Structure formats: C-alpha cells, structure tokens
Image (cartoon, rainbow, N blue to C red):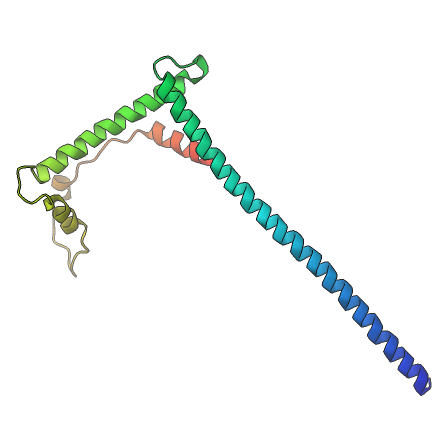
Length: 158
C-alpha cells in the first residue's frame, strides 16, 4: 500500500466516522424530541385527569345537594352513605367544640388560651418525659372500619 492509498483509506475512514456520527446525532436528537414530547403530553394528561376528578367531585356534590332527599335508585346508596358520613363528621365536630369549651370556657378574658394549651401539649418534651397515666388522659375512640376501607378503595380507584 503506497502513501496515496493510505491517505485515501484514512480520508474514507474519517468521512465514514463523520457520517456515522452525524447519523447517531440525528437519531439521538429525534429520540430526545420524542421523549420530551411524550413527557409533555403525559404531564398535560395528568393535569386534565386532575381537572376531570375535580369536575366529577363538583358534579357529585351538586347532585347530592340537589337530590339528597330523592336520589335516583342507582345513586340512593351513595347518597345515604354521604349523609351518614356528614352526620358522623358533625357529631365529631360537636365533641371537638365541647372539648375546646371545657379546656377554655368562653367567659375567659383571653381567647388565645386554647392555642396556648395546644401549644403546651404539642411541645417537644425535655430530656426526660414526665410520667403520666395515659388511660386517664386519652380515651380510645371507635373507628368505623368499613368507612375507612371504602375511603381507601376510593383512593385506589383514582
């Protein structure tokens, strides 16, 4: 192989490498564009699904408010479940209000007493915790396990 043939071989090899590099660059560029477009579309889909869930909730709430006393047969069970849940919430809120009143009666001059009591209760304990009779302080509450399971099922459906 003479010098001219060697130079031609090197020149052809360099051109081939440049061509292959350009092809790889173009292929990578196309894939990057597709990945970016896919990501953008998936984000837009997630936003639309979030909007859809919000709209479904609004429809459900509006339907319930309009037809809770006389729902269609297919929705009667769901409406009664909503009513029962609202009743449980109201009962618990009444108990919270009663407990707040017991902690800080309204006739106190300082209305921030409750916040002060909560702040004391939620403060991090010092190095050693004081011994307390937990049974006397805390009362075990009943939990509606069926309602919790249904709420978890609803969350999984979304």
